[in-house]
View 1 (cartoon, rainbow over the protein chains, first blue to last red):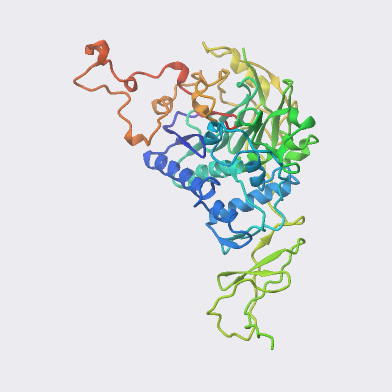
View 2 (cartoon, each protein chain N blue to C red):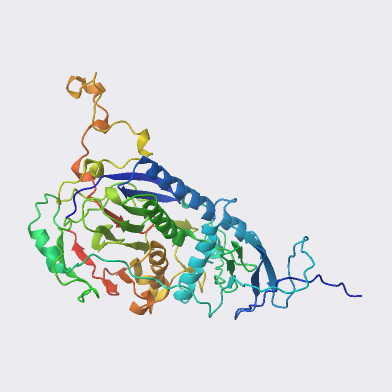
Length: 311
Length: 213
């Protein structure tokens, strides 16, 4: 076991969720940088801020928009995930979410008490035709295509902050943004980082993974929910139908993915909710733990999850 | 008479499978052109250069055949075999709710993983559900009980701060003029001077990934 190293912890609220960061071998200045960086990325990518770059893109009606290098990279990452998953992960569900009532921060949506308008599902248009230029930092969305980087944005931010902390002198970092976790570098008291995974039905830890460097993300239909008229809906959208998943795939209530980065883990964690035929090949070289509503748990991929049975 | 188009020094020619639009780098300016070759914007200061220059098409138009990077696997410790974990449990002195490691979900070993047991004791106690609101996702580091591993650095077991650390009052040194033993009950030492309860101290290097609330 390594000798214990000093670690700094910081916890704050951003991106409509809780952020927990552990910095090994860091200092207060690094903690401040990390918090500023998360806030900065939220400012760039939040669809709820009218002056964010994502909002500017969504309002551009097909015109090219000059954005930051971070946003170009984020659009590229989202398109890559869309392509890899065959569209099961789709960052263009923006309008679908709006039709489902998710048109403001989740706290504001939950406070809403009025009756819902007739819900007409809006299928996602997909990423075909999106243009991005990493040299000129220009992104162009086709007319009618609007982005929501909600989930993958948290993963990208976790990756960015974790790697940024190491580049600024930290020995190790663990960044958890709403369940999108990135670990990197040297832990404080162990030889590896430990990320525990919850069964969303019981909120008990049911498994864990030990990592040296990688990302973990969990998606569930049971937590980010709100009322739409007489119904309760959630934020995981079937891009084809533009509404919540029905049928066999709806039996999936929680998916955790372990990948090289939190961004990939987040994107891939959406696949089983949409594709009921998802299999190990759906996750490439990554690993996944899938929890269904009947309590069954299955794993995919090469990684051994350490299963924990609550007492 | 048709309007004569100014000569362009760079012409975008890449049309993806979708044929919707392309972008070319033109002297550092993003020039958006459409599949029919009609530019949607040009610079007013475009000098009259008659000799075409080499064009570097840097933009990517997403289409069915667009090539992207692929997901990669996480980097694992030398071993995560279940027997090692079970042994660690047996020697644990945890006083919290026991967690039984019943095995691994995937029976195969990790490709490339070493076959020797890990030299490290892994925290073995199951983390109970974190207390607190259900509205927050990922408040992971408050969820688990104290680890039974080697004592961690005090800094790692300190309560999670909610503001930049430099704004926090000292957590270990009570005011010199107000030692805790002299405080009347109504002016007891602030909570930050007390040692954190064991149930709220996170094990080091551990977090929980749960879906965003």
